[in-house]
Length: 255
Image (cartoon, rainbow, N blue to C red; front, side):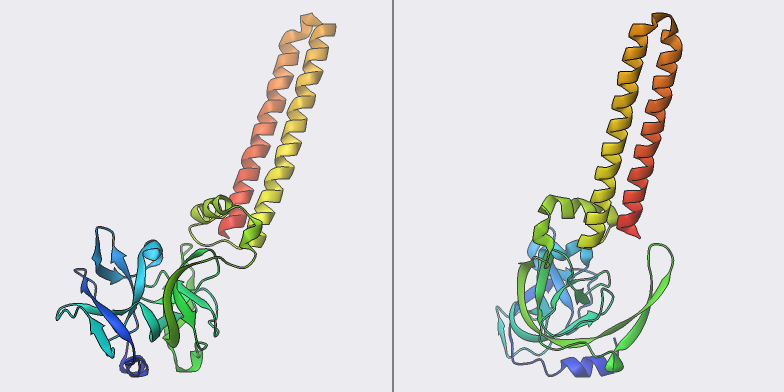
């Protein structure tokens, strides 16, 4: 991460930390966010978006006190103030922002949706003194993000984003799962409105076509073949509209 960033974290030595074993392959540095491994809560690994639910705390290389010291372990701050590695991959970071795990291993980001967080920032991320990284998103587009240290009031908790209480939690979970990332309230509402309008339109179209077909059959039974053919065509159009609506709703969530 560079000597400059390590120097920024060196002052974080007035904390009380707990020692954890380090998962094989995890090279932890001071300020890194860690989560418990899936099968062993006494062992930690660098946190990512995939391990948000298992967040433990922040690595501190120079804590004031270490509980259950382990020579080969990592010193993890579970509560208190520590320097944490963050990036603006999910937007600029200001004081009082909630920090959660990000796609960059061991590095936090601003929480904008309901999720588990590792703490609250006490200062903003100053991009002038931060390092830059170039990342590539799922569509292949490159982005430049800033990575640096900020002071964090450590304390893992579940964060509920402002405005999210307007929607049932399962709706947000479905939207986030489909998009592969947190989705804003505005996008979810736009997607829901599109689905509702389409459902009403398709239902009305099928109902009108079916009713018309039944009336026509009663008046002219000999034309049953043509009437059924027309009804099937209307149903096919309705299915195509429904499919196009689902595709449109998906694009609203992921773009």
